[in-house]
Length: 248
Ligand code: PEP
Image (cartoon, rainbow, N blue to C red; front, side, top):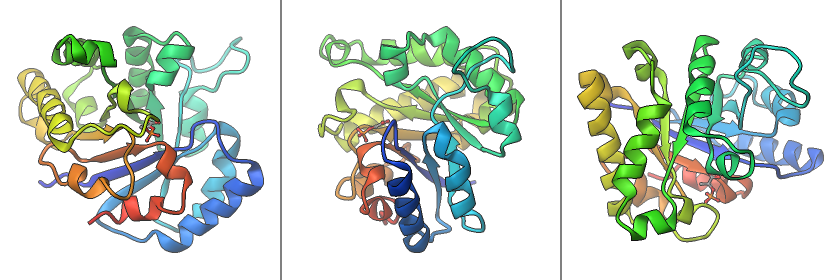
């Protein structure tokens, strides 16, 4: 069965409430596709507003992070259980900015992803190498380790649901996109690792590329055999996000 592409926007910590409302309404009126699953991952405080604006459209919402506990004394945190109760279908887990600035590790990524799945959320699990690791030709080793830990203890059923985003850190927010060949070879390696562990279910897992995707490079990247769409940062805040979504 063909894998449906996903284009997920990651607003990060951007936009005022008024701009968020205006932009979501704009996207609601111009995005219309059955070929691609569109997800807008917005700041927690905007989830309900964006959800209401997008009600009745095919665009879905996602959170950018979650806590692995269901509830408790974790001031400032939001649980997967809360997101699930608020009918948020997607959650980004282990974005490199979370790993860099908030001390997330492969292990916490695994715990969060498992918890997300247990609440019926779809985790978009981010993995990616630094520039130094690439230059020292350690990309495949790094990615393989991150992936192995991120999916530890997942059942075949879990694996069929997750989304993996290969995001080379050197390409995030830098305007420096991986070439389609660089992105494809890592996404293909990720799928092969999944196949070794889980067999043919690997063919149904969506593997996204992220790192300076825009309306100009989306088409060539998303048409590679093992790239099933993208996780888009900067370009998800611009009107041209519509062009990334309608990349074909
Ligand atoms: C991201 O935030 O995941 C990302 C890929 O950002 P950008 O598209 O801006 O590089």
